[in-house]
Length: 113
Length: 115
Image (cartoon, rainbow over all chains, first blue to last red; front, side):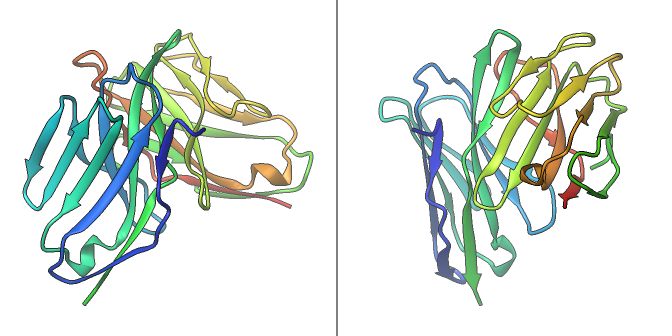
């Protein structure tokens, strides 16, 4: 079982719709959770972080965390063509060498104009 | 990608050749990471370094060595390149802060092809 799992997609939504991206993780002691966005040919960039159960909103983005279910999601409201990218779910875990971040395989999102 | 410089940006190697990917930062961060990214595989951690002089294995360390001789630089070496190491390599930094609150800043990436 992968430590962080995401549907690879592609997920296709029309412009203005809500895009829903999901992620599950296997290590129950994980404390920090992130969503990174990666445009084709570019490096990943952080768009959301969440550390406690519940919802966290930032503009059109809402991250949701349920530690009991080991589930993290990202909602993008009023999706725009510029949101078309790969979205990477990431989880922090502590190891003997310090904290390290483990990524899921990413979900490709296409927003159709 | 200000603050994180990766070199080279592109490289083509023949099987068995060696090379070193360089990562340099000007952000005075302690923790540095090397990831590789392959289609459909997301980012996989190769090695990381919590501080100058320390390194630890990540998810896929085989075939790689790293060096963190000073705080500023973290290098990744392929001693005998194999076609399976064809990938895009990213260096990343993690600023010090709240425990566990890693937020990674990535370099622009190095695209390596092994023939």
